[in-house]
Image (tube, rainbow, N blue to C red; front, side, top):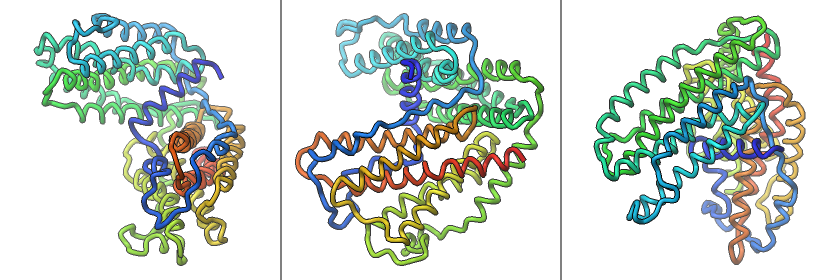
Length: 443
């Protein structure tokens, strides 16, 4: 993999860490799992073999590539924003060490992102420019927080700017049209683009709603302008990318009706899955339809089925086609994974790990399933993006093991084992999930 691709993955990972993960709390439960009655513990020094097998990497194909001039302009915007901030920042520039470090970190992160954007090529350029709002956000934070140290008036017009950019985001969202070539590959590519633009604009709106109007410190001012710049940058990149996409079409077709039909069919399928109320005292047992005689199994059921509830709710609530289509793929993957785990529980396949061996086995099965799924990633699609994020969850699970390696004494592996079980099931289910979604989208 190219260095540009690796940096693009790291950028996407930073955004995911700051936002959503389909594993959510599961991936960080790990060795600090406090729910088990009396988990078996193994020496931390024995954990390293768990991570011996190399984790695969997924770089989803890009549905469109930005123009080189747009990459340069975006990088120039970042450079322009950070140019007033001294490098390095010295105590005489900012006596307060905490503020100085925060501004320096924001500046350095922005410059790193700007350099990556400027040098990215081919498909990597798409993923780099998708992260450009993060670079612009960091740059604006550094610039404004530094300026606010001597001039508090920089915050005077922030509310007006927030309202202006909020209007831009709303108008850009309403202007999204679901177009593409009406071929199998064309529909898959158009759906991937729809999910990307709807997701990014949703994130932009969320950042604007979180803008702090209090502005108690210079860092508060910096954070507020960072959110505004992120949203403004998101509109800018999608103005460009959507124009590039439309110019690339061989036979531009309105696909809104096809997308709507696929979404409605996916919702009907999700609504047909009748899950018990999570408020029930016997909820885990009701989910699997049998008695669970160990707390470990109850937690495994919870880990496996909680994503099904979440994405089922998401699928029913979203009002943007791109978001709904992505939720449809996620639901297919999550529910099929849960069904696999439920069958394995009924077959008596799981028990709390007493050594590292079961953990190694589940992780290696997860890696094998990921490698099989990656072989089918050839064209831009929502399935490719969901696969990348699932493999990224595998990385997060690995990091829980890595943290435990630095500990002294014994640790429980119950949480990590459950993580790998769920990830293995999701990765094994992924090809079938994608196939079911494609059948609806291409009908």
